[in-house]
Length: 182
Image 1 (cartoon, rainbow, N blue to C red):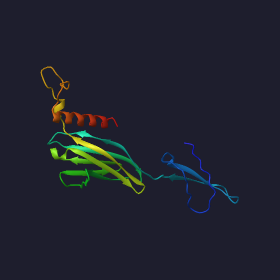
Image 2: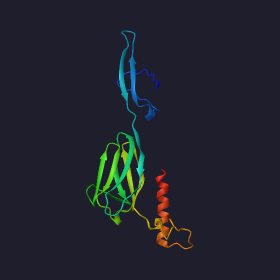
Image 3: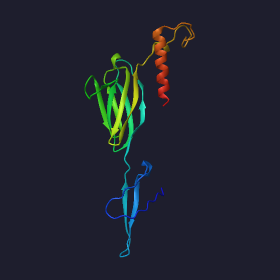
Image 4: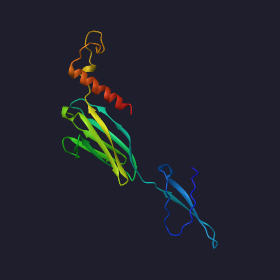
C-alpha cells in the first residue's frame, strides 16, 4: 500500500501521530545527506491499539456435556483475557472450568455442564492500551417452549394463556437468537 511519510529528524526515533492500525507493516526508510549515497533500510512499523472483540458467540450445551464459550480479540500488544460469571471472576481449574488462552483467542471450557452453569458470562480482553468486554450466554440444549404441544403441531404458541415458565423460556430464546445475529 502506498503510504509515505516524510520526516527530517536527528536521532534514532521518529514519532508518527495520527497513524492507524491499518498502516502497520513494512516500510522503506531512506536516509541521505550531501556526503554519501543514500542509505536504504526496511523497517517494521507496529501500531499499538486497544482490544476489540471480533468473535463472541453464545452456545447451547446439554446438562452433563462438555461446553465451550469462545472469545476472540484483536489487539496490539496481544490482549490478556479474564472471564466472569455475573460479577464473580472465574479462575482456571476451579468449579469445573478450564480457561485456555492462545494468542488472540480465549476459551472457557466446562467439563460437565450443570444447571448452575447456565447463565451470562463476560469475556474481558485487555492490554496496556485499554480493555473491552462481551457478554456470552451458556444455555440449555432444549427449551420446553420449543417442544411440540399436541398431535401434528410444531409449537402451539397461539394459545391465549402461556404458562409463565414457557413464556420466560420463549423470551430467553428470542434474546439469544437476537444476540446470535451479531
